[in-house]
Length: 302
Image 1 (spheres, rainbow, N blue to C red):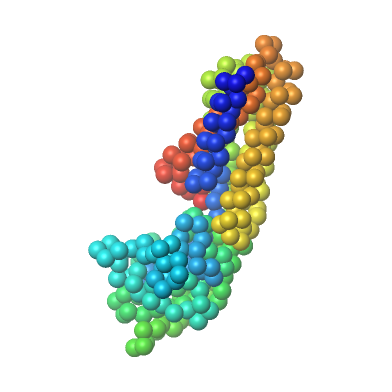
Image 2 (cartoon, rainbow, N blue to C red):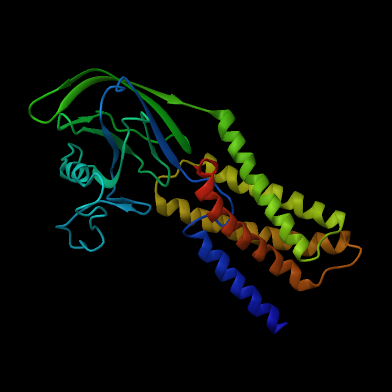
């Protein structure tokens, strides 16, 4: 029994640790995408300005702050587009929003994506290096969807000698429900496949055992993804706090259901330690799978 308790503690710490930098399961993460129209012949960079001086792993560059070691520069001399970084860092926003050192060259893609814990609320800022001018969309925006997609049309663009540009804008929110549902169920099915594979490793291969595991995971993972997806998270901290609490709840529900149901449906009753260790190992496996798949198929998670 002592041996199994040690295994339980080790796997719990592993699963909890994995939940922080990535996803303990293949869960979604908030994102913002801005699609631009009317700038097809321009060279320009885009960033989102934040009301807070940090969000997720990104933070402002504040060399004069008392915590300057934390708010250090991510870009260094010699890095690609370092001159553009300096321009964004020097921008003074009228609402005192912060540049969080996240920007992209959108000249070819005509789209900007912040795929991991974007700021909320935010402002859209463009920089045109050939004219050395800034263009700011003059409204403060909020992410109303978990995966927010907006189309920003820019017309009547004029550059001025004082380093600013003016233009007229039309903003439209895009709700791609079909893609969201496809990615949603893909994440659920991936997690389910991993959980079943781990169950076979634990010699839980009776048809009714696998059915219980499949139904349990289908319920818990759909509930987890639905809560994360439907909630409009206001901060990185709120998201991860709720994510960890939900994951602990998922582990508890799965363990409890296995302890109650599996003995009743099994021809050969599994040893008790499997009810505890199996869901921990399965969630740890989902964690590592999520890390790998996120690098190969990032669209599934954002």
